[in-house]
Amino acid sequence: MKIDSLETLFVEELRDVYNAEGQLTKALPKMAKKATSEELRSAFEEHLEQTREHIERLEQVFETVGKPAKGKTCEAMKGLVEEGSSMMKEDMDDNVMDAALIAIGQKVEHYEIATYGTLRTWAEILGQDEAVDLLQQTLDEEKETDDRLTELAESTINAEATAGEE
Ligand code: FE
Ligand code: FE
Image 1: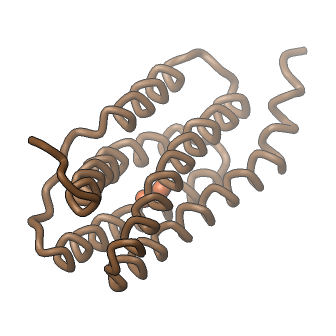
Image 2 (image 1 turned 30 degrees about the vertical axis):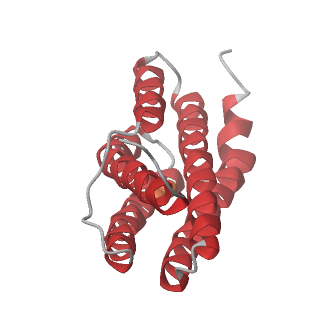
């Protein structure tokens, strides 16, 4: 299929991120389960709820452009999730594992921030005002989650992780 316009590319990218969010609804519960810090666990659990809303918002965006909500395997997210799950299989102390989980989470959030930022800009160019609003809301939540993970990395978790074995 030829991607003959920015609008077609926009829809292709929507399909990519729609699939990526779906992959995350499966990965986040595993990450929450693996976390030792209560705060980290609730950060992942709350972001899982937000992720479900991101999926609903994407369905609304598909509607505004008159296309069916359909995903297309996001290879990048697949790679991030695979890398994350092999990291989670490593033998680590609890605090070090929490630091690793934050790293996985932040890589995912940064990927989403890049994607939603691009989509929001394209929606602006295309004059899709409703889509701009919806994409901006999700972009803001991804950024908030990333900031929250940075705060968690800076607070107790990594400080304890650096202590290491006696
Ligand atoms: Fe998301
Ligand atoms: Fe996210």
